Structures are given as C-alpha cells and as structure tokens.
Image (cartoon, rainbow, N blue to C red):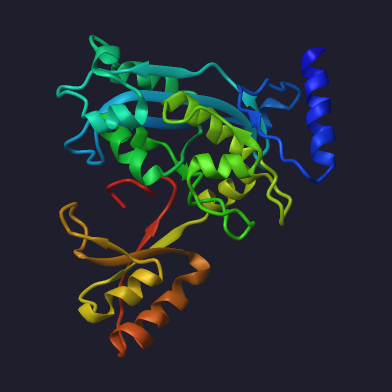
Length: 296
C-alpha cells in the first residue's frame, strides 16, 4: 500500500514538469506468460579486476544477472544472480579498493572455479556487458567457454547519442533513463545494465535491448589503416579509429569497426583522405561470436 502511495506521489511530481524522479533499481519480476520458444536467456556480466590488463591483472569479483527476453527485444524479468568474490594472487591495489570498495579482507580465502562459471553460463544464449571490450578478454581468460558464446555491448551496440542521451557511462545513462543504483559492485552494475536495456528509446520508441540485438546480429567489418602517414593520425582518431600496438598478434596500425553498409564508404575515406591513392586496406569480418575478444 505504501509503495503504491509513493509511486502515485512520484507520478504526480513528474506530471508537473518541475521534477524528475529517480527510482531505485531492483530485480525485475519474471513475466512467464510468453511462449518459451519465443524467449531466450541472456546474461548481463560485470567483472571487478585488479587492473586493466587481462594478461597481468586478475578478476576479484564476478557478477552475472540472467534475464529472460523475447526475440524482438523485450525483457520479461530476471533470474537468480551469480555474485562471488575471488582472492587474487597479488594484493588488491589501493586505487581498486577505493573504486570498488573491495578490500583484501573481503576476498581472503574466496575462490571461483571455471566449472562453477560453466554451469551458470550454460543457460545463456547471449552475454552482454557494458564495455564488453574490457570484460570479454578477462572472462575468456578465466573460462574458455566464454569464447563459444555470442557477445553484445550495452555501451556500443545501442545508439544512445542518436537517441538523445549524453555520455556512455553506465551510471550516467541509467540516471538519464530515470533510475539510480549503488555502483561499482559487479552484480549492482549488472542489474543496472539489465534495467537500462528495458528503456524505451525516446526517438525510435523501441526497447534498448531491441536495438542491441539488431546490432549484435549484423556482421561488422574491421578496416585497418596500415602504414598510414603519421601526420594524419589525429584525423584517423577524430573519425573513431583506435590504435593497436601489435602485441596481440594483430597489425600494428590504426583501425575502425563499421557495419556492412558503411564498409565501402570507409574504404573510400582511406583512399581519398589518408593514402591519396588507390589502396586495398586490410578488412576483417567480425560477428558477435568473436567481437570484443582478443581474437578480433
């Protein structure tokens, strides 16, 4: 009764146009009325780690929130979560403790096995992370089975800017969508990510998950500007190209990733504005099965 009263008050405030009300994020009750053959289970994943390097640094917290969704991108609810701490082989850096709140005492003696992860992830048709370029390499290094699942990114695969949102950080997007949460612990970030994907995008009026699924289902192309003139690096960077130092086995060069429809346009840009001659830049097709991994 009290909840209904508070929600009525929130709606009354919002209706005046003078207030915006942020609602606390919570697990989503599961709607079981949809036909099972039209639904899938996704897992929103978030990791806390000792640093940014998946080769040198380690996972200290695994957060995974399974969610049931329809093939057209509606989230029907969440399932029981996976939230576990793990003691790394080296002490947790002070700056990581300051960011996450995870102390050495909290992780002392805590372990997670790849077998536990495998059992939990077995139900998943899709793995989603907010900044999958960070999470996927760490996850695959911990359990190789993550490399056999398609991945999507709630930061890159939803056109937030085109829909009128500012920034791409999870906390800021959630706030603009009308929610708040206690950030920087893995499972809290996962619940926030799932809730964000329920948001109906203001311009297209489609659920954010629908846009994410559409992007994840489309092949993309990496285009590499090998041996590009050094004095044009700022032009490449301004267009969204990223630098790869070659240590991962891929070319030492600037590269970008574009949808199929933009492939020819990007190749034309390199020919006419970077190389100023006819070239055939290295291109590689990337799908959700290897995108965001060290293999792509």
